[in-house]
Image 1 (cartoon, rainbow, N blue to C red):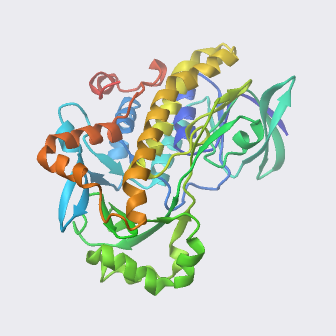
Image 2: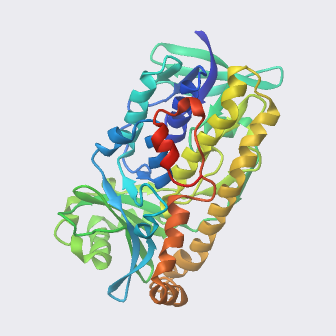
Image 3: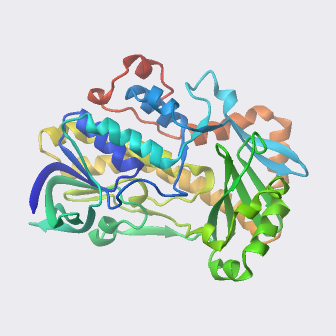
Length: 417
């Protein structure tokens, strides 16, 4: 089958779905290809940051999002010497942010919400169970994708193809775009444990010699990231589930009664942590954004926020050229120019945290964050607003194209841009 569209988007994650909805509302014919049959996948990024909450308000989706089951994180705190030290406090930004918190919502709920909104737009098409397998090239440029779907193989020709298919992106891999890799010495293992009430009320990293666990409170359970040295997944699994449970209880004694719900090491999902970015995000006819352009470390949980802001900037910069079907290489380069600064700064911050916080703890050289950092936050609690702003708002928040906005009042009162 041979089909055509104006913009083909590979990947129905947050970046792909947001971009597809914004472009469709701006009058651009768009087709999103998602290889899975649904969005139900555990341990994807579930953090919805204040700027993304503002975006949902502007799109007229704020009330529908608020109705979804969710927990709200107002503070990020470390357990140091038996007491909590707050490093990031969103409540100190109440006067600056419409939503002074991070909403924790299963990613599939957010994606289903965006898909439902997309179905209301005549220019929006979402193709589930459709995997992009290769790029179509003509006359030295990318002119679409080949795919495999429920009805077999086909080609989707497009004026522009946007890769939103994550850190292992097929389009990025086959495009030949150069990648800059930054070494990361640790990986993450995700699992969840039932909890009752407010046993774990804030996002709380727990640390000990050679161990870090990041506790994310959710509705009825805690989502936990165990950080350990890269390449140690075989050893961790060979020790068995009992040893793993003991490690959990050692750092998080509140879970002693429920950690048995982690039945086997099959319930512990390994994430190969990567930190990299493309030197150039585009080639003629193809643009990479989100994790396809810059794989982020889980530190700070900012990957989704950056990907969504990439999508908003892309829609704002390219909606008009796409409507006129005149998307030049220069226009594609403008997306990277717009989004390079926040990407570089966030990755620089993550590298500092890797070196100054994660590395020394995993090496056993330090049981908690550096003492000067702890002393500074204790002496000046107001400084906790700075990390909260960096995490919640970011370096360069973006506004959607005018044609995509449905709530003008929200657009006027949303947070800084």
